[in-house]
Length: 183
Image: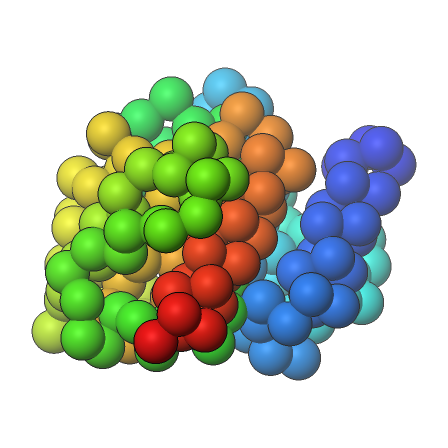
């Protein structure tokens, strides 16, 4: 059973991701880790309208509950195994994704982006959605960075909480937008 406070946190962060335009109606996913327990959004859920049924409890190791989990569960597990992350947010912010097509890093020009994120790695995988290769390159990049972008797909951010991981995605999209405005 997932407690009400955790449901509220997932719902609030999911709504904020959607309202801020950081993901599409059914895009993106989020998870938290508590020991060997992982709570992740359901495959096909709407982050802007999460309900208790949209949160799936699974584990660090594969199990029967995995069938309903986000396809990106393999990536989340790899990030948890490689880092001290307690939460992960994955979204599809348009300016960030657009920059990933042509750049190997995103170098914020704004003070907040530089302070919060520093240089953001952009990594590549032949199969971008839910692949073991994506899991490997992202978990490697996130060992030393709070956020990394999977080329053509979007950022994965780690944090001590969903709020912190959301902040990384939000700051990166603001920085990418500023870079685009600067031309």
